[in-house]
Image (cartoon, rainbow, N blue to C red; front, side, top):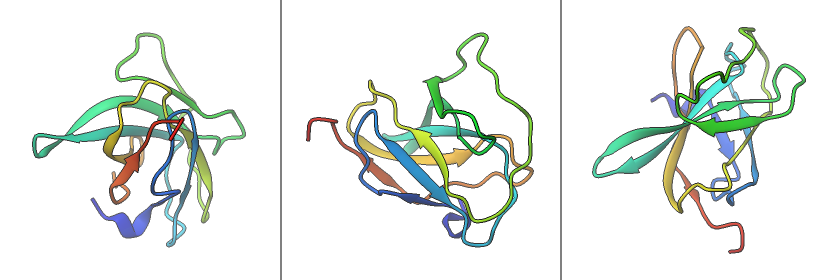
Amino acid sequence: MRPELMVARPSRPVTGGVVELTFPLETMRGVAFVLERHEDGTWQYLYDMVSDGNSGAPQTVPALTEGFGHDDVGVGGPGPDRVRIPEDAEAGRYRICTANAGDEFCTGPIEIVPGDA
């Protein structure tokens, strides 16, 4: 998982909110991420995410959405790279992981809460 490579703030984001990802070791990565939910002792891949790391707007779609794509670019530096939490995400424990970095890694757990909380 290597959470020392990527930190999510806030650690309790709301549905529809933005999370800033920072990279303490200025780790190289792409702009693609995945959002996984902790269920029954395992991590379930639920959403594909693209950050604003390439000067675009953050996008989030259900996992494996047909036709969804992103630029295959490398990003360096400390960030922040911003990703959007889906409006329809259920409250619970999640993590954000890189999806197109050479060395995949994840944040520590975050707790998504309803947007009206």
